[in-house]
Image 1: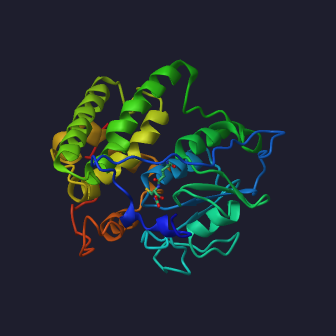
Image 2 (image 1 turned 90 degrees about the horizontal axis):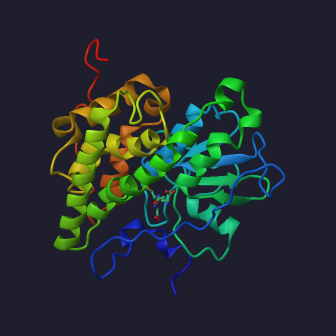
Length: 324
Ligand SMILES: N[C@@H](CCC(=O)N[C@@H](CS)C(=O)NCC(=O)O)C(=O)O
């Protein structure tokens, strides 16, 4: 029986005997809907994130795209995920980290124990918190973004309410793509970096680069600038957090080094630079210092000296002059 909060230490994340990382399912899976337990209300819900975390990053992007800043508050934790999990500013005063305005928590895990004193699973971000019922509405990023698409539309101006990131005609195709992009790319970098033996690594890294080739070919054929042509959709939102972290972190720290985005994937490189430089919802939610410090410092089982490398320079390449 694990001691309370013991599983907050990410360096003790258990890799099964076959060396293949298995992600435990998230537990709080509620939705926000009128007349339900969690109705849409301005100021009632709060999002806890790390700028480092690619899953939390999705939720920040959608919050910004939908203009939900005044409806849903946000608190960013320190990127130094330590023995007690994610710290708020009062536990680790890192640039850009904040204190918990709702519960005065020291660590994210405190919120999990307020929601459920016998909470048995991981203390992950993102967390969508209900201030009124003092509980977690949802801690699964793929569902939080779908909540944000429309659950608060009644509180938003028309031009934000009508935004659609999962259009009906692309739903099946998006769900299909989400599956292999998640397995091989979003989670694939973790399966590669956390592999417990050579065989598990070989399998994960080949699958990862096979699927990077596949998405590269899809973007090459798209009329652009997005995966599905002129429409910015969930497919872009779910892929971006992994690709923006790829060269600065995954290529080295997670040994995802069969190639890099900037040198081997011209279409993906152009796609990611376009999102970063032309859309504030992407650039404004990307913090390379938080990203790099988190991985290289927190995963000391992979990087025991906790040295954060300087490169690559730049973190992301600029758009060339006049580039479409
Ligand atoms: N399935 C979750 C995964 C979230 C997740 O794994 N977050 C990581 C950071 S990137 C975390 O908080 N890990 C801390 C832990 O597992 O203790 C989601 O997509 O929301």
